[in-house]
Image (tube, rainbow, N blue to C red; front, side):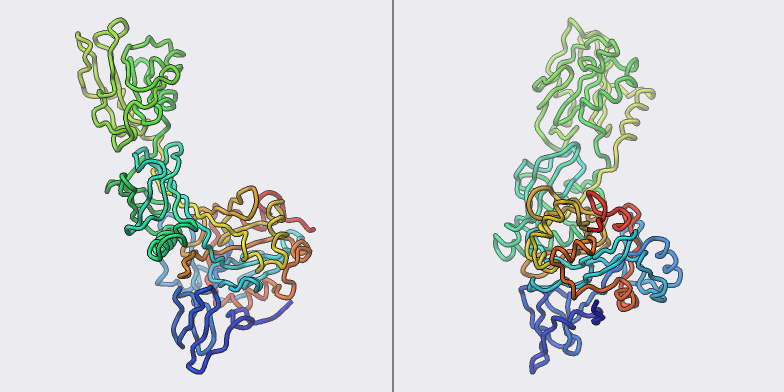
Length: 523
């Protein structure tokens, strides 16, 4: 194994400065020519007295026990800003590399650098032994032109029609995609927005993705739809109003959940929902409780008993509809079934919108105050609503030329990933590998350390990527044998100069869990 200097990437690949002291950075296709003491366009590499060096230290992820010990004696970084809703801890410097051991350290791709052109081996190819298996972790930062973000927004409110264009700073950056249960979904980025439009569209798309993936708030507008502010792990803001509750379920599900609690307190409940509006006395839940049909007929297309579609248009009102007056969805009251004094509750799927009526002698609903015992059931709806959040899932294609930094025969890596012989992580966070061809990965940005993402002005995002597999499999698949370094050597050289991050408790320690669909195999 080599004992080359790991603290900068110039040992193997750095260009010599010209007569004016300029040095060409080859970390991406832009090929910046950097003046002494200055950084390149991406602020990730600098000319330090004629050497091309990384501006950010490599991030080493350490287990929480070690992090706690180091935090007591380490000097905190005053410029560090931690996310208030996570338990991760940053330690700026380690008092001694003796405190770091191979069993407690995982070398992440954050700050590792890239190896453009792609035929170069990855910046760090790290060997370690775990549970009796000799492993190799290939550590790099990928330049992703083929990447985007899937944004899940917990709200019933109508944000925009499917396929409606999403804009940031006046530029198209994505579109609305199919809604899921209680959430609106956006698909942002992708190669067509990054590279297929104008230069400004590509730049704005890159800036939007970078901010979202680094957990920053982003303002978006949807064509003929809403204005929204989204930030990973925070409540979305729709047309200036923060969302607070994710619905407990659709109208039919809400009826099913609370039918027994409503029984005896009311004669009819209508749960207004843009997707499936529920009517208790017609619903199977009401039938099981032997409730007589109340005869209050709602608008819309009847699906099955007590379940109605299209009671109103999508909008910002009750249950994601465009109504603010709930009685507007009542089509008729059947005098052969309804009766004077019938108690009618109307509510939305979050319990935020509520109205209570009693039918008079003419069978007209007259609004009254919600009785205290009935209010308890409404409060229970709210209690069962989860907080409304925005979730950002980074999605990228890693099946291209960056594989050459791992092996001389890239298809062998793809095949090993498909078999489940390779663990892929991003900044130490687990990823989901999509089935089928290539290596398409998805990662929750909240599972990754803060500021995991960078950019290059090609435009493309830069994100950490780690491949872990058994050493024998790595070598059998054409891995770069001469560039393997031991984790002990990484700790010795980079430890005092690295950034240490405590491992997020929600993430599996890669070597304890093995690969995503199996265990690390010895061959």
